[in-house]
View 1: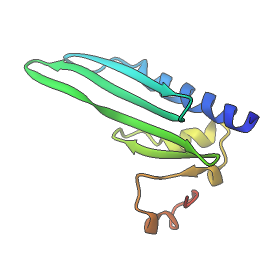
View 2: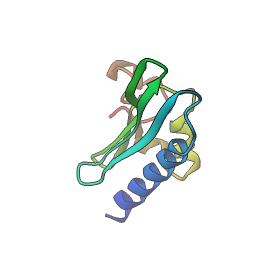
View 3: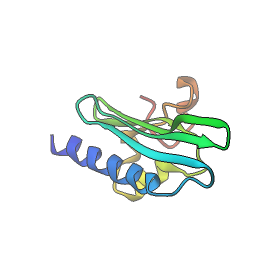
Length: 111
């Protein structure tokens, strides 16, 4: 259980850091969504760029079966590497945004 709580805190710390950055233009709010019961963690953008609606998830991480699954990352940040730097084992990180057949060619877990 301590292992799971450590991963929850690490994921929240990482996403909170990126959510603290101001969106580069427009009236867009950067929100964190942390569901600690189901272990889903996201950064969501909500607002307007002039007359265009902005809404979407920029980062999504799940914790499943004791592993951290990176489900979406639409930024240029290597969040898997940042998780490693925060003390997460590469064997406990799954690049869920890659097809299952390609995961074997990464330095991370396959699932």
